[in-house]
Amino acid sequence: MASPVVLVVDDEALIRMLIIETLRDAGFDVLEAEDASSALEVLRRTPDVALLCTDVRMPGDLDGVDLALRVAAWRPDVRLMIISASNPGDARLSGVTFLAKPFPTRRLAELALGQLAAPPQRRSDQTASRPEEPRCLGAAAHGGSFASPRTDKASAAMPDASAMTP
Image (cartoon, rainbow, N blue to C red; front, side):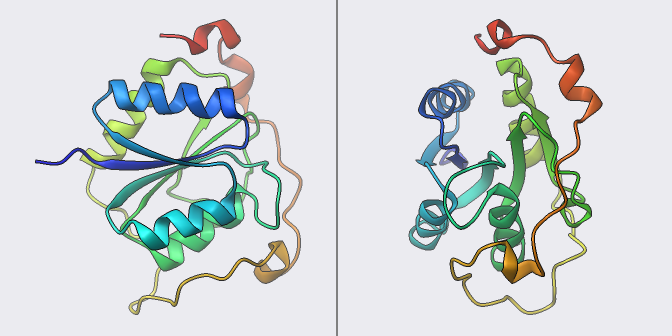
């Protein structure tokens, strides 16, 4: 049986490498992208991606929230996890797992395994028909810019960066 495929999207190379190493050690096959546009291209080429782990703030026309919303509409089979220092607090992301940076690597592995073990959740934005592939548009495609991210209380309680090592 093949290992589940995870796509990691983060513009910070060292953090992306840490996430990739943690997920590989947990038994996942891992693909990577440094921005949302590249991630969409990977998803077009790789139908067996089971989980998307994305940062929120990234360069380019799309941020991690844009990416998660597009993937939720286009590929409802892909589970979603946002890994960021700030919780976007966007109601459209209900049902999406959030992990605050910095994080213990064991927690990342636990959440990823849990995401794939749980039955799929029907997201409120899913429709009966599968939408066409997303085009790379900015936040304006979602009715304007997003509200400024709020600080999640869990972020303040998370350990310092030294806890990000196994």
